[in-house]
Length: 294
Image 1 (spheres, rainbow, N blue to C red):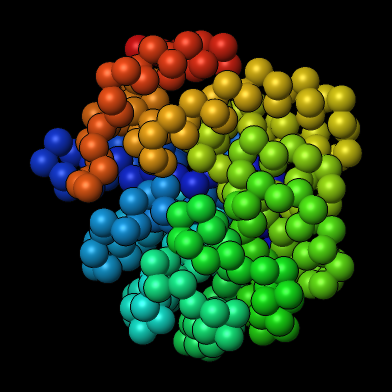
Image 2 (image 1 turned 60 degrees about the horizontal axis):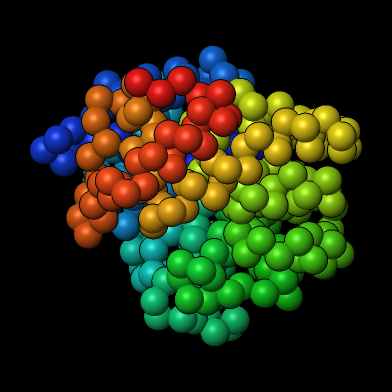
C-alpha cells in the first residue's frame, strides 16, 4: 500500500530534446533525500503524450534503476487507444514498478461502458497493480464514482487518482469502493482536505519543487492533525496556483530548472517553455514557499 506524498515527476530533457538521464538521476536522489513516499514516472506531468513507447518504457525502467529499491516507482501507462495502453503495460512489465497509473482515454470520450472495458482489458494484460486516473479537465471524460466502483472489483485495480477537485467524491468513492481501495488526490489545492476526509495520498505536481513541506503536510493530514496540516499547507497555496498559469508541466519544469535541479527547462512541442510574463509570478510564489531560486 502506497500512502502519502507521491510526486508526479517531470521528465528532464536536453536542449536537443533527448531525455537528460543525468538530471533524472539527480531528481530521484532529491526525492529520496526529501522523504517523498513514491514517484510516478512518465505520467502526464512527465510528458507521456510526447514520448514514444520505447522511450517511455526506457525512462520508467531507468527511474526504477536509479531508485534502487529506496523509493517506490509507479509507471504511467495511459493511452487513448486500449491496444496502445496494453502494449505500454507489457513494455513496462519487467521494469520493477510497483504499480501503474492509467489516465482515462483522452479526446475520444468513451462512455462508462467503454471505460470499464478499457481498464478491464489493460488490467487483464498484467498482474501488476493498476491505479485509475480521472482528470476530466484534460481528457474531456469524467469517470464517475459508480464506474470506479465497478472497476474496483477487478482484482489488480487497487485505487484511483481523482483530480476533479470535487471533495464530495471522497466519501462517495469510499462508500462504493470500500476501505481497502486507495484514493489519491490529483489536485494540489484541495489535497489537504482530501486526505483529512479519508484519502490515502496525493499524486502531486507541486511536490516536484516543495517535496519536504508537501511530505510534512501529507503526514499531518493523514494523522488527522488538522491544525498542523493547515499551517504547512497555507504558505504553499500560491505555488499551487502559479504552477498552472500555463499548461502543466510548463511552469513546474521551469521552476525545477530555476532551482538548479535539472540542466535546462526544455519541453517538447507542442508545449513551449514558460512565457516571460509569468516568470515573476513563479519566482514570487517560490520565494513565499521558501524555495531557493537560482
